[in-house]
Length: 290
Image (cartoon, rainbow, N blue to C red; front, top):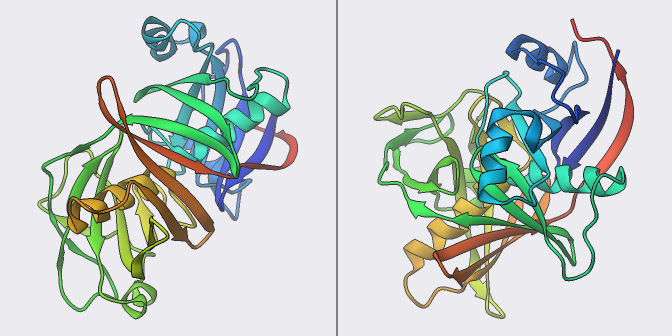
């Protein structure tokens, strides 16, 4: 039997398994079963809590930041490995704090290792904020076809530690008409795949100096989710890019699971993007790994 905790960030839900010494070898098949909503616990992904010193990827994080004691081993619902998860890392941090494995004092930072590099988590008014680090236009701007869209749309490639393609829609009606039970098709196909976000700007776009948009997302290896943290960041970055130089650096993004905040700010190595929002633990139990 393996102990687990179920948690979520704006409806993006995860099975959390504590494995501090890295003794547990989760296969992709086991991950897929655990995440199955009919035959397993049900989740958008798995968060394995492991000490950075216990696994190779974590040891690489320690070279970047010696204080990054914990590594977030994140797996998508289909068992595939992902570089980063913006909602997941807030839930991960919340689990560490609630379990007594780490503390985040007011004004302090908790560094967490991920496959996209070390990410710093702090407290925020809505729960937790994570500095997602540097971002970039990936140059991958495929055409996107999705069920419910009358015509193929251009996408903008954004990299925030993992790959995204953001598509602008004209209205809330178009957004609601999407059928995302099947993954959108990209042309050309991206070798590593991508999360695909569909976004509608608010009317007005900017209120009190804050940008407002609404989004739905299809995550690679998962399908449509109620929220995607890195996708929210990518969406805000894309809309700011389209809006031009006078666009704000603070955004509120509405997703089916709630509201998340995005902030762009200068750092020594370039512009960073931060994501803020809630994290909740729902219940704990034990499960057989088949």
